[in-house]
Length: 286
Image (cartoon, rainbow, N blue to C red):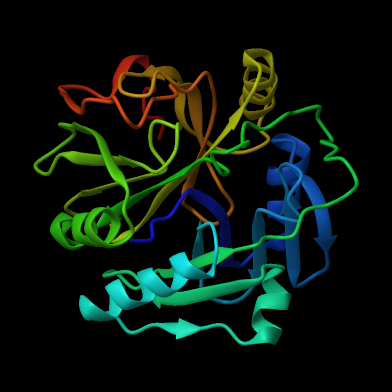
């Protein structure tokens, strides 16, 4: 049975490309690959790109990309998705070339967000160069994680665990519905979700991790100086031990920018259940 190995990219429609350029590159150190009035494409590592933003009138998450090892995994996951009632579509050669991958399979999650399962993402021969000196933690673990506020948790557990093959990391009691945190590599979690009445369904946040606490601190200073609206103060999470802050993106959803996330051994990890999301900090702002 095929399974996904990493959260590899994010594609979104956004209203303000210029604001995103400042937010992503100038404030948080992502490298610009392409910048026009209609598109912003960003690198975080040796891959050709990790975040692709297109200008439009309606903010939308077009694709969350999940990496697999090869065509056999795509075929196995396509069958599993169809068996569970999902409608799927294989990319044309032109679409795959546009994404700079060898092939991908597209479908939508139970709340209508685009999902793409892909393999063979292009790598660059030139090194990643951050405008702020940031170095992102991605090797073997993808670009970070996504957290969704969902209309109902059960269908998402079925999708991510039973079909896509992610494992349970833990739960956090953060409301009437516990947050579910799932892994597919040593990163403690690559996706998380919870039903939050009055909040969603929507992308809650994207997390990216850097390799130095000072990088987080310097970016945090830029936020405090007014570079972008702070969402939550610097703090430390319980389950993945990440030291991070939350900042509001130009699209309204948030980005978590962190250091020191827990890495696990998938073969020996025992899931737990936390009664709080934070050891300290992460006080909500606004």
